[in-house]
Length: 298
Image 1 (cartoon, rainbow, N blue to C red):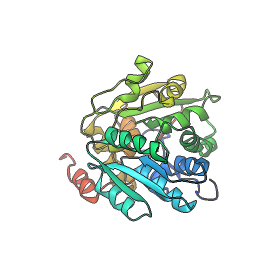
Image 2 (image 1 turned 30 degrees about the horizontal axis):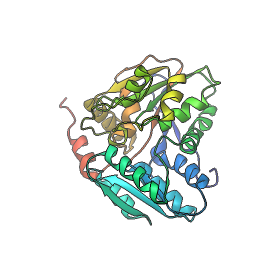
Image 3 (image 1 turned 45 degrees about the vertical axis):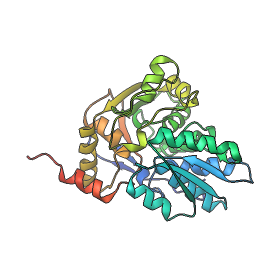
Image 4 (image 1 turned 90 degrees about the horizontal axis):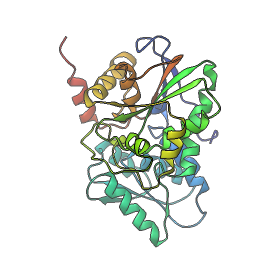
């Protein structure tokens, strides 16, 4: 993976909190951290036959990018409600696109069903190779060398599972999982000890929205190591996007700004240096412009 991806920046941001930093995964070649897991999973897939996945956008973009780099063919199933920016990015790649009626849950079910006809299905989160790929973020955080609190956006849990695995032998690392209040699938599963369906509301953080696949390995991994789960509101996500753009020139989508939103809103206790994972930039220009224009009057 090192030959395909370079370490992403770790920026000090004292305006966010004393000693705070941002881990800028929005600087990845596909615009999000998902490329780490995609490269690992595509490389590990059976060498013959097509690959299929379901995605709200970023994972699909990453799978298409990794498949092209490794000489494979990929089909990406996306909901008809997917972000225009993510659809446009997928259309620019050499992959097959299929649309599912409804949201992410329907796209995931469609892709899993198609896998029965000869495709290798790669989950956006419930895949050990994807999780291992996401864990490589942890190795890039070793340079900090002091106690940290990591603010990690959570949807299906592939990213936070990777971070949790990396941190198993690192008691100095505190992990805060950050969901959108519109889609509390992981926190619900942790409380229940199993995946339970939740109502998913409209959210700017489309990459964090959707129910978890039944039996997802991410629930047990996350529950075993996460220190705290918190939720952020839509306005807190918007405020974080505006902060990142206005103060640091970073274009960040709603899902990617969730960790910063939790830090800005003081949603969780901190120990040591706070680090927010900024996980993606793939937002439609119209959406980004609307969020920027919606700043409260001073």
